[in-house]
Image 1 (cartoon, rainbow, N blue to C red):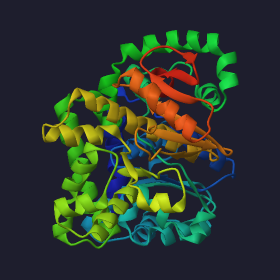
Image 2 (cartoon, rainbow, N blue to C red):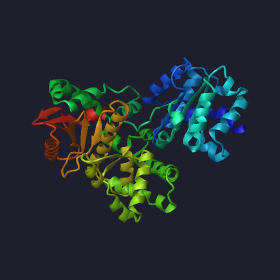
Image 3 (spheres, rainbow, N blue to C red):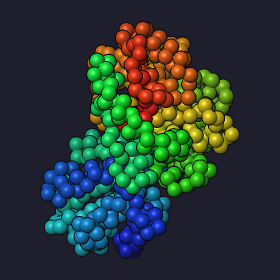
Image 4 (cartoon, helix red, strand yellow):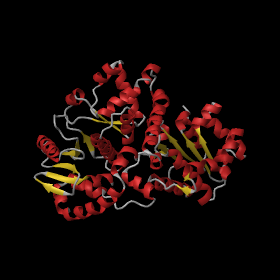
Length: 466
């Protein structure tokens, strides 16, 4: 009980530590607006009472909770003793207690039972996955009181462990790494310029639309290009995909990123799978091999790190669950999917950069790989948030395009020209377009918007601002 009292007394100081840089309040990420809507709905007696924020370590989830805490006590004037801000990482290690036991102690401090609450209480629970029974505990709180609001963060694997009962009660708001627009928001502390999401996607999916909007896209390129140049694209791709990096030098960013990966390996991945310690010690070698190339051959990795091919598969699957990596399948029949290597991308490009730089292997030509990570992540986020009908593959044939978008049975190859000779990119995208009967392909270029001989050249700036 004393521990809970201490957390209530010190919560504001802790929140300010995360929500401020010196005396300046940190800007809020895009997900903040959705969290605020959930809080408003709860005050009206509507909407979900449980909001889950899964995401990769380092994406700023604790900062988000801190900003919510300060919003509750400062803007909504909620009494501090009616907001419990607690980390289950700390509570489980210090007390060996779970969420249910903590709530029972909180009821005694509050002098009220959840079942009989007349006024709202708010539970801000960081690292909720450190309680193995978190899903059941949140369901019990939800069912006990209509006046209890829960905002909980956790690893990306959190969303895979939600019980069937909780799925019907909770809303999931995934916290992604920074895209370029959020990088702009946090760096400049002002709203980003126009984000051409729908226009660019329509241009990719319709050559006729791309031609009809040619002048519009040319003007948009000039506007976005100026802002993009001012923000050092290379620094963003190398260091800017996780929020903490904004205020650090390059070497500090790499050190902190490797520290995050270390925690992922020895805390998150270790819990996801029952790996022997010797296997955990080899996981950085596996990540380094993936950092060299997105195309992953399990047998090659198995031979190099001296563990079985099956164990390699389990390791990479665990990294996917922890949101360090995500995969793209080759386009083709089931047999081709089984035979061909899948491609694996880093959820935050800074991870590839930090791994390669730490062993002296990062070269300027690797900027193309970082952009490939970023673009694959853009497509993945689109599919998960706003365009569920969009599917993304890669062309497994030699000299095939980096990506093949499939939308309503249409196949559109996409090749990244960033850091490559344009002639080679044109050849690859045309070959894939012919192979899949696409009629045209997309080349993401270093220059302006144009359309030539079945290739739509779309500036990289358009994708950075998506």
